[in-house]
Amino acid sequence: MKQYLKKKFTVKALIYLGIVMGLIIISYGIYWANTQIQLKKLQQTVAEYKNQNWPYLNSTLPLEQRVQDLLSRMTQAEKIGQLALVEKNSVHNLTDVITYGLGGILSGSGAKPEPNTPEAWLSMVTAFDTASRNSRLGIPVLYGVDANHGHSNVPGATLFPHFIGLGATHDADLVFRVAQATAAETAASGIFWNFSPMLDVVQDPRWGRTYESFGSNTKSVSQLGEAYIKGLQNSSSTNITVLGTVKHYLGVGAMVWGSSTNKNFFIDQGTTTIDEMTLRTVHLPPFQAAINSGAMSVMVGLNSWQGQKMAASHYLITDVLKNELAFKGFVVSDWYGVYEIDSNKYRSTITAINAGVDMVMLPFDYKSFITDVGSAIRNDDISQTRLDDAVSRILRVKFKLGLFDHPIKQNLSQAIIGSKAHRDIAREAVRKSLVILKNNNHLLPLSKEANRIIVAGAVADNLGRQAGGWTVEWQGIDGNWIDGTTILNGIRQAVSPTTTVEYSQAGNFDHATSRADIGIAIVGEKPYAEGWGDNPHPALTDEDLTTIQNVKQASKKLVVIIVSGRPLDIKPYAHDWDAVIAAWLPGSEGNGVSDVLFGDYPFTGKLPIAWKIK
Ligand code: BGC
Image (cartoon, rainbow, N blue to C red; front, side, top):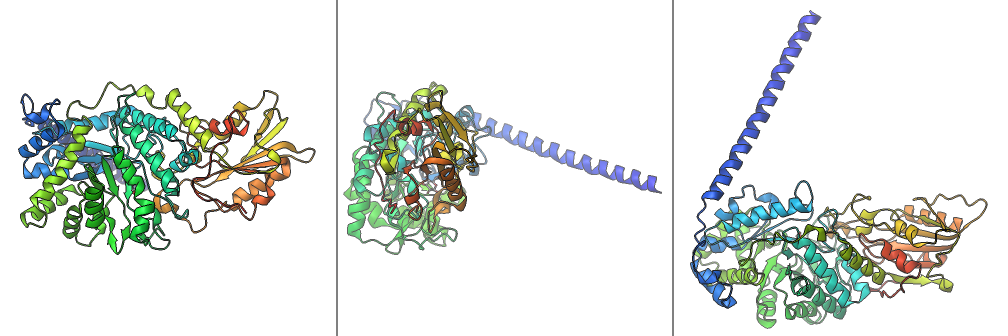
């Protein structure tokens, strides 16, 4: 009987296995057939523009003439498609790029190709680019990413300090070079659009995006923002132009605590309550400066002002930005921001486009968006003039970037990604970003000749924590699996050959017989991004404080290095420490920290935002 049951069971299991295998084979077959059909369709597409002498194809003609010529040849559907900015994972068929004439595609943070290598990025972006060039008029698609501290989507790229650290350098020439290097690394993976720089002037460090800002000083944010835009876009020495996007227009740095419209956040995506005068004097100047320096794309924020979502503000987008500041590029909305205007998608869409939004970061469903805009034009809810204006602005930027005149530059060497030259710039940026918060009896810089140095702390040997959010993943990563030098390794490389450097993450050192000459505790925040980093009281954790205490007991002099995206409250403890350094989020080149710690370079960084330690 048992034998019989066993046999029956085996037969059943085999049948199930067969069914499962069959299903796998069938779905793979369908997938394969679908891909073949798509490729076939792509090959059959009539790219009418090829072999034509149409004026817009002629790079010697004036820009506006080319824009108008192309516009006059476009169907209504082709125009509407240009307004759509879609997340790459929402484009299920490559042919949709042609069918719907999509204007832009983006990788939301963490939306990477598999494997996540520069080659795979290039081939993924090239596939979208090629599809768009196979459309009737061959209008190239713009592919955008957030490369806000280097091309941080790709392991192996150079990771520069986050903007708060660059803000501490107060060095516009350096920021220009950082942006130039970032442009070269993104371009080498086929990407010519960077949703950066963020020009929000931070008022409340509890905000989770504090570290993405150059700081709280309007003048400094303006100067560094200008340098960054120039570095991305006008790199005459590298001959690479990557479109920058200044964000988030406007007053996003002044949102108030507790006003977030996102149930998971406190401040991000909240309300800006300041009056117009403050908006204009504190928050507008960086945008004005960037536009004067050639910024061609502006992203409107997810905040509200005077009871209105920013993407719905005709006054701020059209009257102020486009008319008063004479901005001629295109306005792009932020992630799903347009649909947060109203519970009805159609109404949201017409409100935003009429307010002056040109390209909509949907980022998901483009088909219903395209239908809605089509109906809105037919119903006269959006005028033909407004549609033509939005499309002209997008085309103008595409022409200016040179996208019509050359396909993605395949000849850019990918060796530039994470190159020594770029890492040197990043290291310099780290050096210049460090700020001394306390230095009792001139303990800093440290001597390289000390007999014994002990190093501890959760950030001492952790590249992911050094790099912060927006690193490979939206919320950042943990550990040492990307390229770079940890702060601990930097220290090891800097000291004299006779110095012993001991490391214990938790600070468990033997101090029964003698104490080390110097103890260094490297502690701080875990990576976070956007509203997930909203924090009512940014401070050190109990774990960090215990580590610091351990190091103090085991050493004669204590240096605390804080790796964080913003000022942390250390008032209750700092009196007990000999020296304190703010290292912000330095990125991949931890040896920039040891460069100044041991006096090879002076400390020159100054606070970009208030930080009281007493
Ligand atoms: C952020 C933007 C970013 C966009 C695309 C949004 O969540 O607010 O700053 O550029 O995502 O990744």
